[in-house]
View 1 (tube, rainbow, N blue to C red):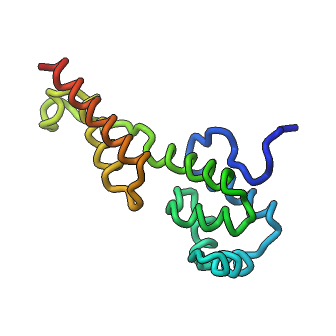
View 2: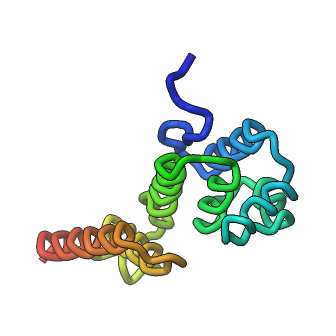
Length: 155
Protein backbone atom coordinates (compact mmCIF):
# COMPACT_ATOMS: atom_id res chain seq x y z
CA UNK A 1 0.00 0.00 0.00
CA UNK A 2 1.30 3.46 -0.85
CA UNK A 3 0.67 6.76 0.87
CA UNK A 4 0.50 8.49 -2.50
CA UNK A 5 -2.89 9.91 -3.44
CA UNK A 6 -4.33 8.82 -6.80
CA UNK A 7 -3.89 12.35 -8.21
CA UNK A 8 -0.10 12.37 -7.93
CA UNK A 9 2.29 10.96 -10.50
CA UNK A 10 4.21 7.79 -9.80
CA UNK A 11 7.57 8.64 -8.21
CA UNK A 12 10.20 9.37 -10.83
CA UNK A 13 8.82 8.01 -14.10
CA UNK A 14 11.92 7.01 -16.04
CA UNK A 15 10.42 7.01 -19.52
CA UNK A 16 7.66 8.79 -21.41
CA UNK A 17 5.84 5.43 -21.59
CA UNK A 18 5.78 5.20 -17.77
CA UNK A 19 4.55 8.80 -17.58
CA UNK A 20 1.70 8.16 -20.04
CA UNK A 21 0.80 4.96 -18.20
CA UNK A 22 0.48 7.07 -15.04
CA UNK A 23 -1.80 9.49 -16.87
CA UNK A 24 -3.94 6.56 -18.01
CA UNK A 25 -4.24 5.40 -14.40
CA UNK A 26 -5.24 8.93 -13.39
CA UNK A 27 -7.99 8.90 -16.03
CA UNK A 28 -9.27 5.56 -14.75
CA UNK A 29 -9.18 6.90 -11.17
CA UNK A 30 -11.22 9.96 -12.22
CA UNK A 31 -13.95 7.76 -13.72
CA UNK A 32 -14.51 10.35 -16.46
CA UNK A 33 -14.83 9.83 -20.21
CA UNK A 34 -12.76 11.79 -22.70
CA UNK A 35 -15.78 13.95 -23.52
CA UNK A 36 -16.47 14.62 -19.83
CA UNK A 37 -12.83 15.62 -19.34
CA UNK A 38 -13.10 17.97 -22.32
CA UNK A 39 -16.23 19.58 -20.85
CA UNK A 40 -14.63 20.01 -17.42
CA UNK A 41 -11.50 21.53 -18.96
CA UNK A 42 -13.56 23.95 -21.05
CA UNK A 43 -15.54 25.00 -17.98
CA UNK A 44 -12.25 25.74 -16.21
CA UNK A 45 -10.92 27.78 -19.15
CA UNK A 46 -8.57 25.09 -20.48
CA UNK A 47 -8.46 23.63 -23.97
CA UNK A 48 -8.54 19.83 -23.93
CA UNK A 49 -10.08 18.33 -27.08
CA UNK A 50 -11.16 14.77 -26.36
CA UNK A 51 -9.68 13.56 -29.66
CA UNK A 52 -6.26 15.02 -28.80
CA UNK A 53 -6.38 13.42 -25.38
CA UNK A 54 -7.38 10.03 -26.78
CA UNK A 55 -4.61 10.27 -29.35
CA UNK A 56 -2.00 11.18 -26.73
CA UNK A 57 -3.03 8.25 -24.56
CA UNK A 58 -2.73 5.88 -27.52
CA UNK A 59 1.01 6.60 -27.75
CA UNK A 60 3.94 6.20 -25.43
CA UNK A 61 5.42 9.62 -26.21
CA UNK A 62 5.51 12.51 -23.80
CA UNK A 63 2.41 14.66 -24.40
CA UNK A 64 2.57 18.44 -24.55
CA UNK A 65 2.96 20.19 -21.22
CA UNK A 66 -0.26 22.17 -21.73
CA UNK A 67 -2.21 18.96 -22.23
CA UNK A 68 -0.85 17.49 -18.99
CA UNK A 69 -1.85 20.58 -17.01
CA UNK A 70 -5.35 20.78 -18.47
CA UNK A 71 -5.87 17.03 -18.10
CA UNK A 72 -4.79 16.82 -14.46
CA UNK A 73 -6.98 19.79 -13.54
CA UNK A 74 -9.96 18.25 -15.38
CA UNK A 75 -9.42 14.99 -13.47
CA UNK A 76 -9.81 16.90 -10.22
CA UNK A 77 -6.18 17.12 -9.14
CA UNK A 78 -5.34 19.76 -6.56
CA UNK A 79 -2.89 22.51 -7.64
CA UNK A 80 0.03 20.82 -5.88
CA UNK A 81 -0.77 17.51 -7.62
CA UNK A 82 -0.92 19.22 -11.01
CA UNK A 83 2.43 20.87 -10.18
CA UNK A 84 3.89 17.43 -9.38
CA UNK A 85 2.74 16.10 -12.76
CA UNK A 86 4.23 19.12 -14.52
CA UNK A 87 7.51 18.71 -12.61
CA UNK A 88 7.67 15.04 -13.65
CA UNK A 89 6.95 16.10 -17.24
CA UNK A 90 9.72 18.70 -17.13
CA UNK A 91 12.15 16.15 -15.74
CA UNK A 92 11.49 13.77 -18.60
CA UNK A 93 11.51 16.52 -21.22
CA UNK A 94 14.90 17.82 -20.14
CA UNK A 95 16.59 14.58 -19.09
CA UNK A 96 20.05 13.90 -20.38
CA UNK A 97 20.26 12.32 -23.79
CA UNK A 98 22.94 10.15 -25.20
CA UNK A 99 24.98 11.50 -28.03
CA UNK A 100 24.73 9.70 -31.35
CA UNK A 101 27.51 7.25 -32.00
CA UNK A 102 30.23 8.76 -34.14
CA UNK A 103 33.80 8.17 -35.02
CA UNK A 104 36.50 10.82 -34.94
CA UNK A 105 36.60 10.92 -38.73
CA UNK A 106 32.97 11.77 -39.46
CA UNK A 107 32.01 14.14 -36.65
CA UNK A 108 33.49 17.64 -36.39
CA UNK A 109 32.38 17.85 -32.74
CA UNK A 110 34.26 14.68 -31.76
CA UNK A 111 37.59 16.39 -30.96
CA UNK A 112 35.77 18.36 -28.24
CA UNK A 113 34.46 15.17 -26.71
CA UNK A 114 31.24 13.24 -26.63
CA UNK A 115 30.25 14.98 -23.38
CA UNK A 116 30.29 18.35 -25.15
CA UNK A 117 28.02 16.99 -27.89
CA UNK A 118 25.55 15.70 -25.29
CA UNK A 119 25.51 19.04 -23.45
CA UNK A 120 25.02 20.91 -26.71
CA UNK A 121 22.08 18.71 -27.64
CA UNK A 122 20.50 19.19 -24.19
CA UNK A 123 20.91 22.95 -24.59
CA UNK A 124 19.12 22.93 -27.93
CA UNK A 125 16.29 20.80 -26.54
CA UNK A 126 15.83 23.06 -23.50
CA UNK A 127 15.88 26.20 -25.65
CA UNK A 128 13.31 24.70 -28.03
CA UNK A 129 10.78 24.16 -25.24
CA UNK A 130 7.28 25.21 -26.28
CA UNK A 131 6.57 26.81 -22.93
CA UNK A 132 9.63 28.57 -21.55
CA UNK A 133 9.38 28.91 -17.81
CA UNK A 134 11.78 29.75 -14.99
CA UNK A 135 12.80 26.09 -14.55
CA UNK A 136 13.58 25.69 -18.27
CA UNK A 137 15.55 28.92 -18.24
CA UNK A 138 17.46 27.76 -15.15
CA UNK A 139 18.19 24.41 -16.81
CA UNK A 140 19.42 26.23 -19.91
CA UNK A 141 21.72 28.43 -17.82
CA UNK A 142 23.05 25.33 -16.02
CA UNK A 143 23.80 23.59 -19.31
CA UNK A 144 25.56 26.68 -20.64
CA UNK A 145 27.66 26.72 -17.48
CA UNK A 146 28.52 23.04 -17.92
CA UNK A 147 29.49 23.69 -21.54
CA UNK A 148 31.74 26.57 -20.50
CA UNK A 149 33.38 24.44 -17.78
CA UNK A 150 33.97 21.60 -20.21
CA UNK A 151 35.43 23.96 -22.81
CA UNK A 152 37.81 25.41 -20.19
CA UNK A 153 38.90 21.92 -19.10
CA UNK A 154 39.51 20.83 -22.71
CA UNK A 155 41.41 24.04 -23.47
